[in-house]
Figure: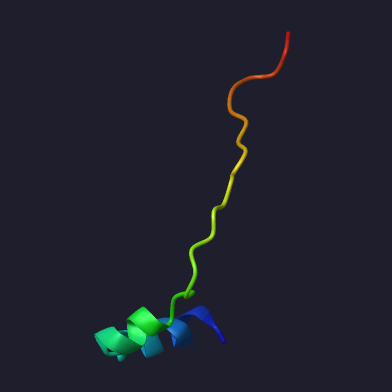
Length: 40
């Protein structure tokens, strides 16, 4: 499904349909990021 099709379908959802589109269980996601310059 292309993004534009997904957005059009999502805009037609009822609140109950929208809520049911999420996962039923929570998951923990750990993201490691590195910011800054390199070494000199």
